[in-house]
Image (cartoon, rainbow, N blue to C red; front, side):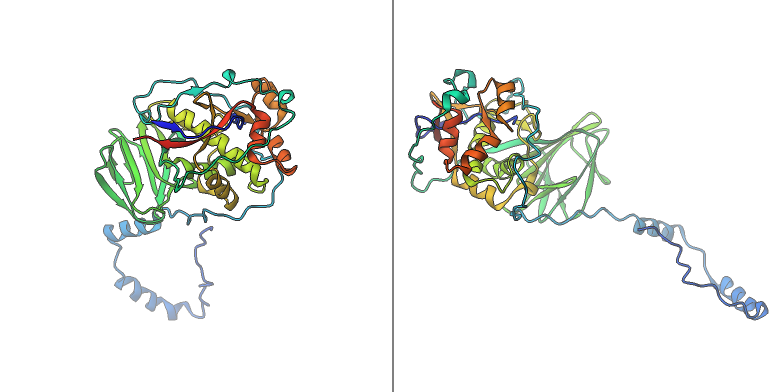
Length: 387
């Protein structure tokens, strides 16, 4: 069960919707025909000695002409921030909707904290939050380490096939964890639904498998991105579902970099990290369905794997480790959007504007003041798992 370790009277937020063409190698082989009579005996002798290609030789040539796809090497997880202007293009005018809760037998049992709807919180309109309150930072417990919570993120839904790969030692397992196959590094493996499960090249596999790196820094490649953690593949008729099982804090490295530019002021990034953590935790308590907690699009939170991780997003997440938005002992489902206008339109003015957070940070407000500016009355708490 989650224990909300320490509350501060104000801090808070709500979340976001916010060829190569092959030439026949002629090699300029046109031999000068000085004398047809001279070359004819040589040509006849060569043809008489040449043996026809055997079927096995032909098959080998066909195999060599169609090598297994090779996937690109992983992008360095800590890519230097690119000089971009805020706001992020990912923050569209389309608000993020909260999926209808569905019961799920796989909901984490330890996450028994209650969820507080934004509607239960005090007035959080911009007019009511004109004067942010200065507060002391949330104290960090001695030797604090964020709980090792695993979030399940749907990264591919209803697709016909995917290309899978790994950057180091990895194994394919079934649902019970039994090893089925090892995977070679940087070998591209196309996966499609089969008649009785999944097909990975010539290999027939169960309808539900995991691709699991065996090293702590192992990554899994899915179509065009690298992901931390492990990847679940599920055959659903003639379509596939692909879910990334990843540590919550590592997940946030990517979300913060997807939802806000890496060059934003650090306190704006910290506010975004806490908002994203709270939103994610709510969906871990109340998952979208039995297979995943939430998706990776703007309907939930944008998540792109390690290609949207930056030094600055790592710093923001680590500096706010385990901090969530709390109201009356529950976790706040923090909704946010790109601008104040979208927050007003989609949430009645109750939510964080990412552009607004950026501007407040530029004026010198810290992340607790930014959150308090948008959500007075909502506090900060730190996650602690209780045995």
